[in-house]
Length: 118
Image (cartoon, rainbow, N blue to C red):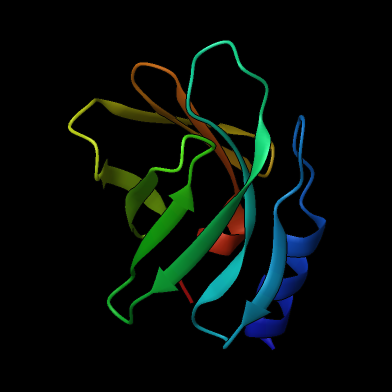
């Protein structure tokens, strides 16, 4: 049942400029889009994304940026702790959306429920 709720959350989560969507899931991993931008000052776009969860509570979100680069963001217990960039990563919660910032201008919006440990 939680896997079904996870899919619905990704499909219906509101975001400022875009909405996270889900095109497929196997209950553990999901494909879809997330609002993102690669450069400071640009508006958010729908970026192809893949969320891979592990049983130990960690997850990896791979997002294809508008520049063509793929950014991986690593989570532990639903919180981002590092990325494939060497730049600083920070985050804040806005309602039910986790907004992730990677210096100098990358921004990602992820539904908090999608990252909750099962």
